[in-house]
Length: 130
Image (cartoon, rainbow, N blue to C red; front, side, top):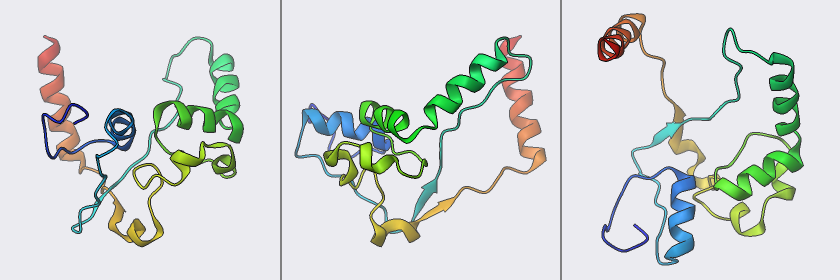
């Protein structure tokens, strides 16, 4: 997108903000049909070593100043209350990063897959490992 080789592309908002930094003419559009509301999460895998350190890191990232630095770096918004005051002003008003109020109704959570579908996915991915 940044090079101008494509005129339209589905992009995650963080990738878009990085492309837009190289090409200010790019515009982020919300489809009128709606979009998936999603989020990234911090998690500790079952059986992980250093669980206490993982918890310390997650708690550190939950601090509004720290998570805002992450947002400033990657261009993805976060769900931590109070972090917006530490985000760069440019990102805070970028509609690709923070959903504008008039577009919020377009974003709906993706329904969970039925167990049968998850089982099929598992079979396919397990087959790749063999």
